Image (cartoon, helix red, strand yellow):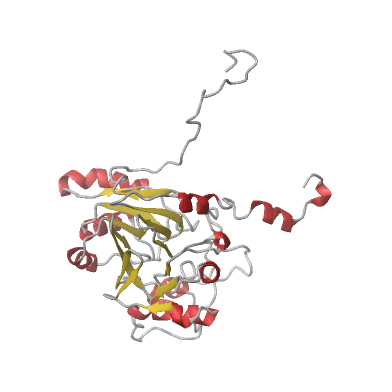
Length: 354
């Protein structure tokens, strides 16, 4: 566009969205994972891309949606899970807070799409379409109601695999292990806005949500998805070897219990006997945003007295993490560039110009 009369909203969107273009898909494709390790990238919310030394690629909870885009009538959708939790009626101001770092239509060579639970910021139709079309051998792995949704969307049933706690699915070089979820918000997520939950028994968690353990030749990755804190984390830590643990983290507004707090994150990591804990999900919603440095501060305050055997890692969306190479890192930083400085003559009016 070289003239203002050529500028349209559609041209602007095509030229700028998604903001990162194919940068990340190119980076992932080019990555050669070292033997005895695994690599992963944070896609936003709780979405990750896992790649192994053997070349297995698994995408989990990749979401390509957005939050509120208009004030509308200022009221929350009747029957929404937050309305049920807090007895509220005013609109939740959950605007998306981070850019789109990956173009789903450029995603290739995926061996499996794993989705933890039924919430729409994890179970995404655009991701499902892109994986189904661009990776024809990919499997779709999730709990019963996630799989039912995929099939309703047009994913062939023969490509889906329903999992419940303690089920195992082999995907390339990775063992995908389903474990119990502790996502109590999911238990009050009901499609029927007129259904009343007071005085009733909850639905079966195993049908709607699971946590996931990825066992790889380079270490084991635990994804706690949107689980709340539970003493059952200690059971998972006792029964499984866990190297890196991911978990949702955020600052809950008064009257709402949805995200793990900083102390919950530390308790979970200790219970799981993890070596590294990485908070996610705090990036995505403006009204739940929290500073993960709080986790580092509390960890530093408590680590000597409680003899913590794990370290926190503060990630950034779009960033890469390698295990075990990054075990001792506390904070992520993007490549700053300019490693080739002065490899050729610079061009300035005179040498001391800058």
